[in-house]
Length: 284
Image (cartoon, rainbow, N blue to C red; front, side):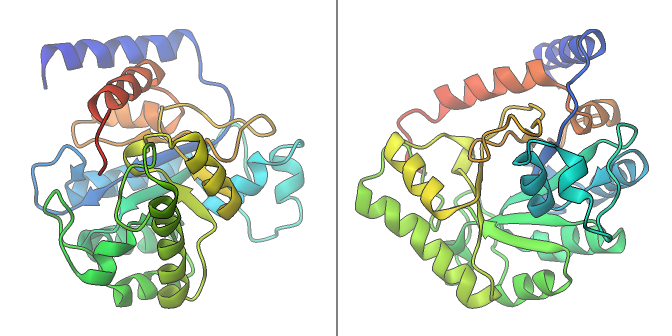
């Protein structure tokens, strides 16, 4: 890890100690687990399982559906969970966390799903459907999952399959026809192969869409995600601008614990700024 990166992490942890994150829902982003690459977002299986065990011990892991229902309620957790007998109790001592995964590479079904199912933890996959449907590798070299494996994951009752566009194109400069194709093709394929049409959406590379794209997303989905390492607060969160916290291979156990608790906000703000600059003018 570079010295600059270490300095930023220490500064972020210090900020978290001085100014505690507000209560709310933390949404974590994963990409790959056990993929065997040197990618910064490809975690060893052992590291991922250790993180899940931390969540089991210190947090309440809830589904994205439950999170969206609660965040959209003015009364917060109490009213939205009161009638659901099988919903885990939410408390300040066990802050709620949602586990999400982007893209849909083959290691999702091979490594991530079994680890989550073993611990009875709900997970949401935002799938880029073109790669799954065509069986072609993602641009970064990862092989895709199959529809059969995603159906099996969904049939566990713990895995939601949601939309991450069709071809993983950025939505900030797409013409209207291409924009509609990206969203509608993804919706149709997930509905056809999984049996349940997606209700939730994640912007590729967490890059916000154009005003036209945002309108199209809001019309089609109950929620949409970006990324900035912020807590989502019940009653005051725009469900189409949910904040997610990226998990990196380089995260120490201390850093992951802080992220799960809604921390590392300074780190998240700087990463979001860098991402906007890095992907400016790109299309995929």
